Length: 122
Image 1 (cartoon, one colour):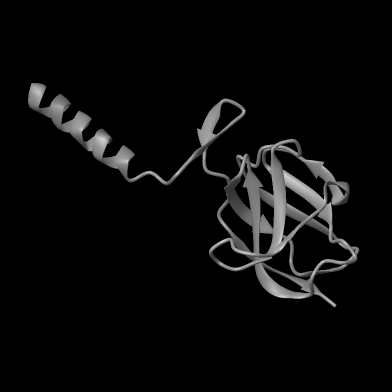
Image 2 (tube, rainbow, N blue to C red; image 1 turned 30 degrees about the vertical axis):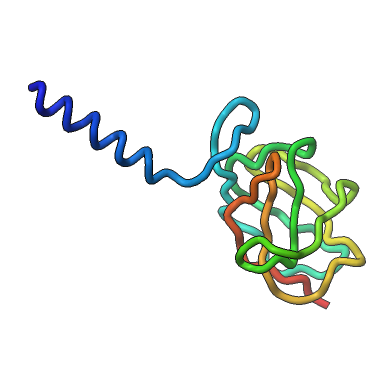
């Protein structure tokens, strides 16, 4: 019985060391995760982003046009955000958002989420 418990503890320690980088948001340590985003949208259109651990408007930013490594891009201004919860964000694509395809990230407390492909249409 002791061997089983010890083996289980070693396995849990090994799995924990493989966990992704995390950030503390609202007292809970989680990596922001994007699950789904509406299809490409034109400037002035609303976009819905679904995910988990997305923080809120006081701790988060939306980045469009970044590369797959989260570099570059355009930060959506706070005034374009209609609603923001821990699981869903709705924002309007600003008139000056760059047109074209790339990646979208949500930054929560300075940490980037997983990315999703997204494009701003003409």
